[in-house]
View 1 (spheres, rainbow, N blue to C red):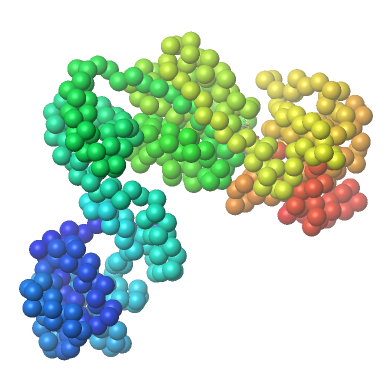
View 2 (view 1 turned 60 degrees about the horizontal axis):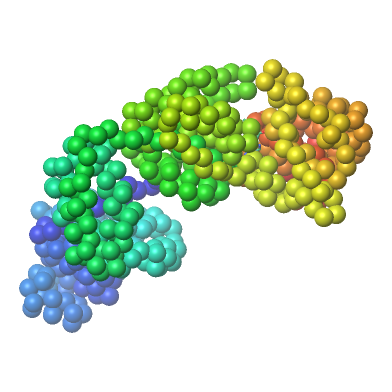
Length: 472
Ligand SMILES: C[S@@+](CC[C@H](N)C(=O)[O-])C[C@H]1O[C@@H](n2cnc3c(N)ncnc32)[C@H](O)[C@@H]1O
């Protein structure tokens, strides 16, 4: 983050605006909306400035800028549009340690005035850090269309009940839960629809109905985070991450996804490497049960889908056995996410009429898999956790009749910025893994459809050119 967004209280504070032309007009409007005590310095200017000055909304000194003008100001804004003058304003403000913005001159400014969506008291600032004002404007338009017109009214409504809620609900968590219930429920909808008196009545009765000191009911959502790309999260998963008190997460969860977790939520890493269980499963289960019993809303965040090689089933059983409220929010599993990213259909009317997800790693190492049943043609196999045993998997399939020249694709870090897709044939799998130094996480797609991977069109990788193994 290049700049820290903050909201500056300017009501009745002195702000200096140097310039009284077009560039200054937009700034004046913002400063007036913020209630600032506006001092303008400019030898001449637009008629609007005369009107504002005559109406007592600004104090306009009709003369050239003097560096002494910055003394005592809370902010300084330069809008002269003239080189030389801008530099002088910026230098004077900086020398006095006063935040300064020079219109369209980020290099001279110590702060940026963002694009603003104003639903006062709700205010949204958008900045592209000066890289693209047009993009900022587009974003603002999109946000404007998303937000209800009455949002400001809702904020004022909620604010009017703050002390009543504080008096009745003693813990921070119980108050937060109540506010979430209100904001997500019919009371907020009534306010937004203009039915404020009905909403007020409902709000009073909700506050009075609070159950004294009753412990909050905890809950665990076992959430699938998808294969890595944060945009592949479901809307429901995002909501759970935003509502959580605690997020218990695995190794495969990337920063982009953790960035979406509610800022105040506690996070506990329980990641596991293949042979190195950093937190044993039993302890994870105990942690989930204990935290939910303490009344917390827990998100158990897992890579891909929790029910596909994710031990989500074991966790759900344990939570249910303990009488803890629990639900599963599915995620995009690595097979479908990676296949989509590589342009590789898992089934295809011409090439594959079945697909099987199989693990390359059993409870005690070797997977317990019926290879004979999986070795037929027109059958796509997606092997999870199979890279370290790629050689023996390929040998098993070939021993049971799968053709050595069956196309394969290895997808490493699928859907992430560092995704690699390596294509070849079944018999070449062990050498491909070695030569391309495939790392985790990766899965292997075996079957005729693998030849359709985007990579396959660019680079035919087969046993003949194995020594030139490359990744795409
Ligand atoms: C313990 S399993 C978890 C699978 C997860 N529950 C799912 O539905 O995708 C971990 C394995 O999933 C595969 N995997 C997960 N994310 C992946 C990704 N982004 N790219 C490739 N493979 C991935 C790898 O085979 C990895 O070893």
